[in-house]
Length: 339
Image (cartoon, rainbow, N blue to C red; front, side, top):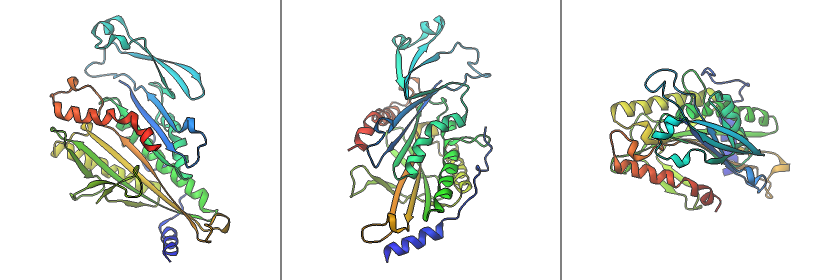
């Protein structure tokens, strides 16, 4: 009876959509890491990728004429690139970490100043597709304040980011699979995690106009799964619904910065998209004959600025240390998720 109710819920909650893009028009260094946890061990070498994006230099304003550091990229083979930092002499003389200049770094791909938002999303497509096929996935945007993390992930009023392209990609997949007897339900939540001056963390539901007590808890059934109690999840039926909700959430985030002094650059923002599907076909049913239900999640994370504490203005040691500890834990995340 429970499965029958679930089937009816999924069928009632999904409306097919035609292929198309959302309403939003399409058009320092930031990096984003894209990873998916595959149900099977295939393509394990591509389960996690690190992509570096270098935004264009400022054409106007303060610092526009200052010499800049350049990145050069050399291919190393499949899904591997070597990056080298180059800088003019006047920059070297002011450089706080001269030993970094000339040093090579390895990543999965490099996107230079001429790269478009579409170029960036192309690097994230395998993660979205893996999620739609049954895996969980994460896309993290990491970098210093002003390097372009939020622009890359969330876009602007005039140019789509990864999130808007994800919405379109998800519903294109649903449209194609619905003809095979599958039904889908999609929902989304938007959470801001702000670190206070003393290091304490404040959780804000950006999809809700009211304040609520939110608490992150570990799932009793899995050490690697967490949930946020009280977080509002919006049902999403077409790409534009997600884009509109995201636009409203970003406006609320701006209001929090203006009126409650919660700067976005000192906060992590997590867009969580959950996809449920049910296959009502005998060749893909459970041994009991019941339909197969699948649930997976894609998380898009806009991390707080990663600049060193001594560069903060005004200085705030407690807040900087707390954000630093959170960002320092990122390298251990894949190992934790891998069990």
